[in-house]
Amino acid sequence: MAVNLDKPQRWKADTQLSVDDYNRWFLEYAPITYRETRARATVYVEDILLRTDNLRRLTGDLLFQHPDALEMLRMSTSPPIARDRLVGLAQVSKSLIANMERHKRISPNLPETVVREQLERITSVISHLIDQDIFIWFNRDTDPTLEEVRRASTVVADRLCGMLTDPLIRNAQEKRQLQRITLWLETRGYAESEMRNLRQMLPGTFAHRVNVTAMQEGSVVVNIPIDTVIMPRSATVGDLPLLVEAKSAGDFTNTNKRRKEEATKMRQLRNAFGDQVRFILLLGGYFDSGYLGYEAAEGIDWVWEHRMDDLAEFGL
Image (cartoon, rainbow, N blue to C red; front, top):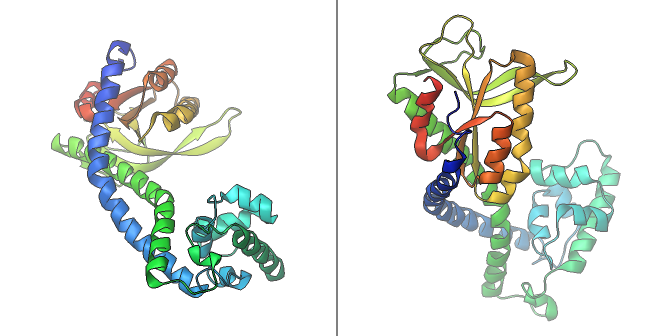
């Protein structure tokens, strides 16, 4: 039985309610996160300025010893230089840049001599592009004042904050959604289970972050991460649990870019379990009619965060 996918007359109103619900949460959570992240980022930038004589002594050795400094240095140029652009300008390994920023270490797959040569090219490009409107002491021969250093650090920290807070907000979104599912289920007598086998879960139990074995075309086995798996209290032997994918978004653009992901999961699950598989979405945030229509066409139903009681209509 369809719950929301066959009711397009409600989609527009639900989208607006969902956006309002998300924005209330974001306005409460994001400013706190941003302030805390900005304070940490400012201290981080000031430390790198101290290590580099206020960016006047950039060396490959600095990046070799402190690969985490690369992210800040990219934000110190005019304009702030993207990773791929830096790879092209410096003619360096893309994996080296990715490793330094994501894992805060030098790639183990490159010889040290090659790494040091590439790091020197990176610092040469950055030195050439330093934003002298921020680091105003590059226009004169005197040292910067403490106030000038603090002001420049704050500007670069602001540039960094967009990159640093986005993952924090995404993690908080996921945590919020799983908490809402947990609260709704536990209020109705469900218990969290350690069981990870879909066929062995007991009626009236649920589990978060379960890897489910599914199948691509051509009988290729794949593991699919499912956010929440719920076995209804009314389940009998042989029944499959309800699979819930939590989706949260702060703008319409990204949701429409990623809407094929759920359709791919649904096809892979059907290849493994047949048409009896039940896979739904928990939506919170910016999901418009274009996204909803695409998912409905794929036979994927959903529940809105602002109307959690719709879960009951899936037999829970």
